[in-house]
Image 1 (cartoon, rainbow, N blue to C red):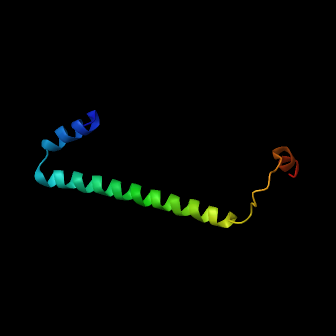
Image 2: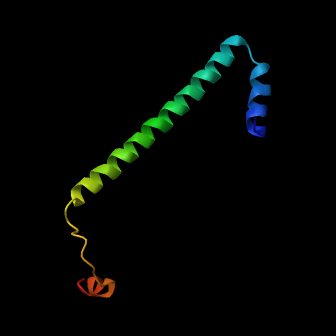
Image 3: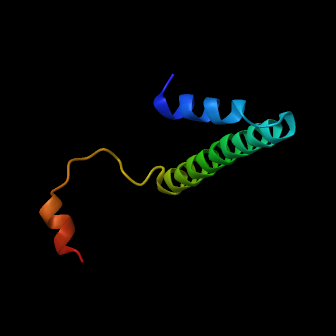
Amino acid sequence: MSIIAEKVFEAVKTLSEQQAVEVLDFVEFLTSKTQKERAQRREIALATLDKHIGLYDGSPFDREELHERR
């Protein structure tokens, strides 16, 4: 167990049952929020990739030549 987890555990042990339930609820909220944000970032990344499907045919290219096109 990490030091932070141990500190949280020790702090929660001093709380009332209702306060401990609130802490657990908050932890579950943070976990859910993180999972939702990760899923949203993944969906955005996949949508970006979908926009570019089929644009590159695998042929070699010269990076300098690409930069000169600007």
